[in-house]
View 1 (tube, rainbow, N blue to C red):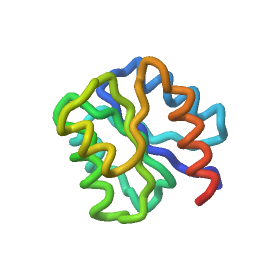
View 2 (view 1 turned 120 degrees about the vertical axis):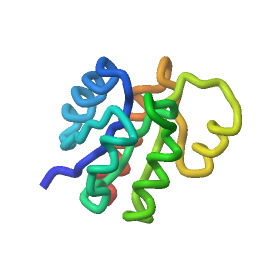
View 3 (view 1 turned 180 degrees about the horizontal axis):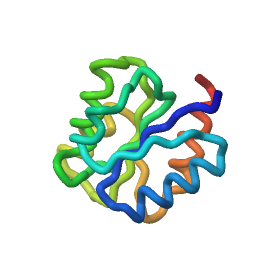
View 4 (view 1 turned 90 degrees about the vertical axis):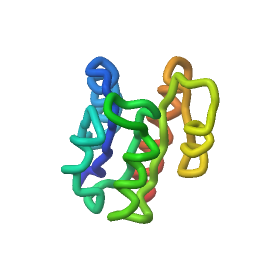
Length: 118
């Protein structure tokens, strides 16, 4: 069975790119565009979650809290274009943070490595 990865981003373009990149690494990808959509995900079935820091109806750390409430050991990382602030520090307390514009390949590698290590 292929490891399952959740990717949450309010950008349809980013979701499509992530699904292509993660799928090419042999991962099953579950996509969500919002906190509302992420609520329907069963985090116990996931190997890893990759979350945009700022999503349409909320923020990545809120999605992380939702997921971790049901799957405390879930590995979580964030993608962001944000430069700083409390939200970024909250995200770093949960998992690694990658810059969207320059570190997408590193984020995909982290996800693939983390999912394989499960």
